[in-house]
Length: 359
Image (cartoon, rainbow, N blue to C red; front, side):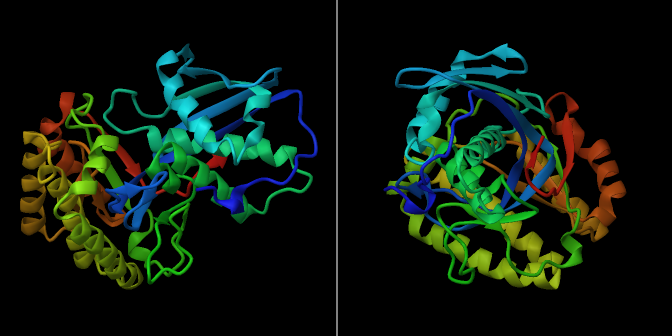
């Protein structure tokens, strides 16, 4: 279905050539989105921390061309990467009604990640949002009147979502909501928006250390996993659970109740993987070392009274979340006790960030 809000007015002029660059962050969902309908629309609302150090930098070079169709080349870390072309072309086909200048230009997409390509961190959210922001920046030049800041970010999130659902949450920060929710009237299925309510100082500069348990390719892609929710026996209960947990988080974010935060965030992570284990066909993305880490974290929390907790994305890696006030002891614990369960002892220290930026 075409969303008329993001259909452009006529363009004033077309620059002959140029380039635009954006840096866009990855994000980690606290309430998970798993299950979609239509064109990348979520079956439940989600909320995420925007990360700071795990990001993608993309430069979009453009030059006027003749003839119909798309003309795109993609370079990862300076090396032409034709394997990415099918995904980019599918993305362009989806967004063409909203950015109809796509067929007027030949594009070179030059992209690089701040984290290793084989690190096991999905780059689709940061990569697609960076590319979407570049396209909106180009469109802003074509229009007779510049977009407002809110519209600019909403359109970028809307386009990014059509490339990768979670990319809708990688445009702004530090907390982003995506998906309609009865207690957040401004929330939309079409784009992510900055969390609109009060957030307690306990959540400022929240830390996320990403333990790289398995850097290999997942045996089941997220796209396939989402599709398996259509016939899942617990799908409706799961969608309700996610929306209920987001309702609970609204008061948690306001009060700063870290005990309640831990309970909701860890339950969400385990529920996500429970859906994978109870789909048909069923599958498991956690690894033995994922479980070892979780058990060690629980023991550490019980022994010390720490407010550290974990979450998981659709993979084996563990995101260790904790307040900035606990940074030194938790990092010491990770180095001594948890790094041994990471592939080659590798982990990435990150923290909550504030969204994308034009370069």
